[in-house]
Image 1 (cartoon, rainbow, N blue to C red):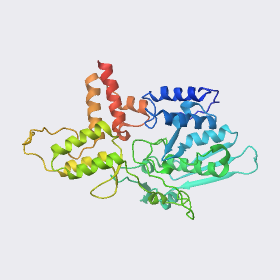
Image 2 (cartoon, helix red, strand yellow; image 1 turned 135 degrees about the horizontal axis):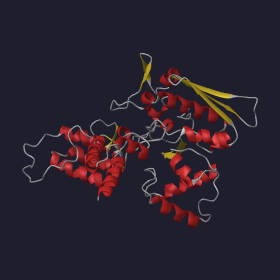
Image 3 (cartoon, rainbow, N blue to C red; image 1 turned 90 degrees about the vertical axis):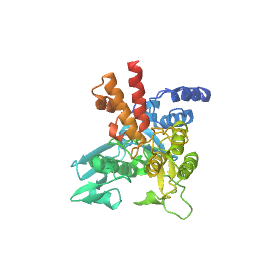
Image 4 (cartoon, helix red, strand yellow; image 1 turned 135 degrees about the vertical axis):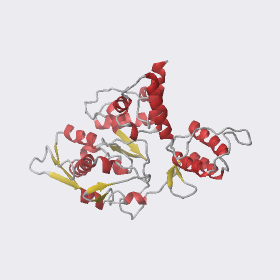
Length: 359
């Protein structure tokens, strides 16, 4: 994502009615980040927030991410805001184990603000573990997170945002944190991908700021998606795969695949997609493709396979059918991340585009 900052010169209508209409039209675009598609109120919020920062609507929509009510931005956008205000930002790194960010304010050129993040500090904050001198960070499914795959980029991002909060509070207008600092799973550019996001809660009287101390994400309250939670409970009571397949189809039609729930079996935070996949694997296999009740098992969740796995398999089959030989390259150009890190929704969108082009 480009974080170029340009002067915002009335790119949106001046009246409230005009701004609302602008947001409604923009929300119809399926090229927007997922949190804005079909949600004009979110679009209007981001655009107005961008107006405060002095950036264009597109820069605001693609660069500002609201995580449970807290606005966040990539370290690139935060750094651009610092430089746009006339301050000097310098970043140094060994490309592996440490990064240092420095800011010299335009109104105080004799003082240098500095912040350094290294592997030891990241490990102390619970962001990774150090094994054999290398960072190791896995999600609950055992897959490497950004702190393991893009360690240098994550260290730079932490150093930039921390020194910016210290030196340039006046130019951030509430953009204190990156999505990753608020619990989102991000790619190498610090942009959130389709993944879990830690829930936030209000700080109660007498409490310290939960974001001021390492490991405080664990203290955040979890609020499951109500409809997804109800469907998960029904899935827990399903007696066979035929019954479960009906629920899977209902989920596909009515609920986001990454809707958060408390898994009925473990009472731990989970996504509806992953829980349905596990539940499918737990239920006994039918002796025949069609059960005694005449209901054919839907090929929605293969055993041990997630919806994202199916979406990738279908996308690659479609690409082969239309003769697209550089699918991985084209996908990364379009969505800014590799297929392996993409969500089912993005892969389905790409498949629809390929299907349309073949028509």
